Length: 83
Image (cartoon, rainbow, N blue to C red; front, top):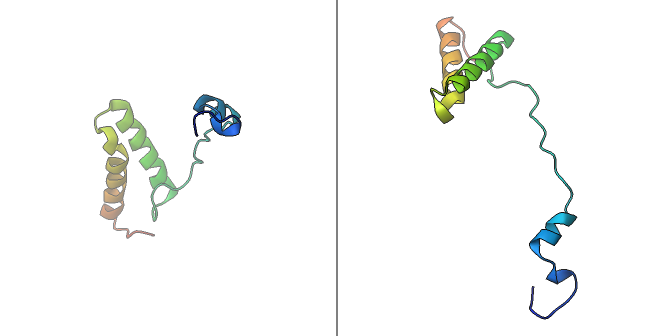
């Protein structure tokens, strides 16, 4: 953008942004969060994650803690990943 010129190159940022299409963020579909575990363990993961976020105990590590907890229980049951 050069001073003294007129035309589309002289639009302000606000004017240019007004011309852009509005993007609506979609929520992610419910799907597999952990690979190699059963549907029940997927639900368990979601439940632990929800409780961890609600309590605020783990902060940004909530997903990691939920995943590690489910995989630990999965292993204790004698399963291997993918079983």
